Length: 260
Image (tube, rainbow, N blue to C red; front, side, top):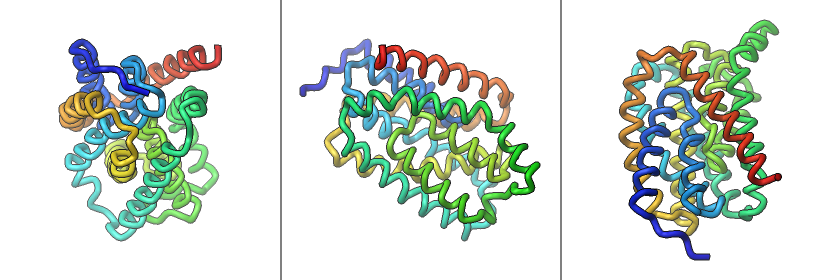
């Protein structure tokens, strides 16, 4: 199936979506909730749109890691284990993208976005509940369940990056990482590792539409740098509300589009 040509108007729209997505990935996660729909609007099949989006938004998390070196100066040995699990999970998820068909992927999209949005919206409450049970922990000394969670999140990120940052922030909060800056730093580190692996796998899979991807990629580079700086000054509650509202609207839209 031939892919649609990239028009100047669509290139501008993708670039703007890339800036917005890259910034939100660095700020609070959920950046792909802004970029993925634009790839679909460009006329790309869902499977190709997802693979292209995975490559395009990669810089948002990766660049943000550079801005959080101080927050990541913790237990290096434990972080290395987390990094390996994220890497393996990302590769597994990317392979699943190649195996699943466009029709099946289309029907999964609204559920994936809804799941990410609901988890993000309830993250603080779930974190308080976990601590109240006496099971609060931290990434520095995680139990086996936390390690399995890290791998599973990596699989999700490699399969569908929309909402990856959202899920990571919520999961890290459940693990006891309640400091927003520390949480954001770890989120960006694990997300960048998982998506980096997925980018390598997807780049050789033949699913990526490179003209659409490169335009968005450049926008995400700009957004990632700006988002890292803004993350230290913008109120976290504002960011949460924007991500939750965006995720809710998009999940409802895709339910209508693919199920009506």
